[in-house]
Length: 181
Image (cartoon, rainbow, N blue to C red; front, side):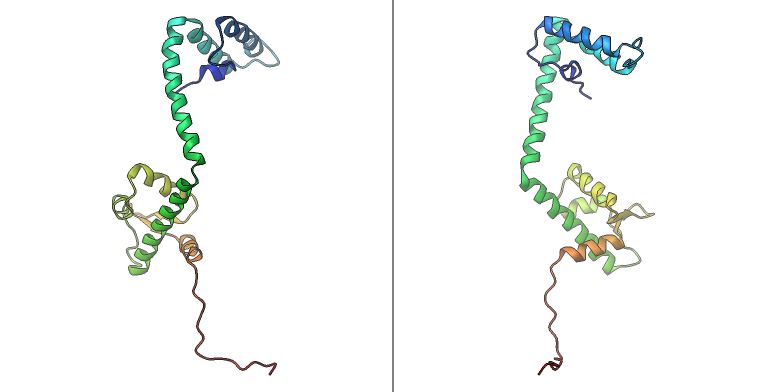
């Protein structure tokens, strides 16, 4: 897992060596374990590790390459988070999964489950993406893993699936006389 040393030291990646030293000394005094009021050994250890990497020009240059790569990942995250179509697609996939599990339960109440591999195949959603949707549906209580390892819709999931599908107005075959006429 990537550790952002600039974030730990609360400095810009453009900070010069004097700034790194000044900020490190200030934070080290604050978080040093001997400081009775604000000492924090874990935070102090992070500061020392960040300082040791960023004060050495060679280590810093190597670290900056990793930092730039990590920033690219962050920007992708921001782009995806601002893409509302991605969230809309997720909702469609989740509704599709619930619908498939709903139909399976309705067709065979004694064997209502579908395996994850089969769900992947039927939904057309890659396993990496499907894991997120299955996690969400399980956390909401809309699906559950059965004893045989397959997934099935729960009562809450049936209610959710029913609430998502618009209902056609009921056509009444019998009409009641209007009591006001």
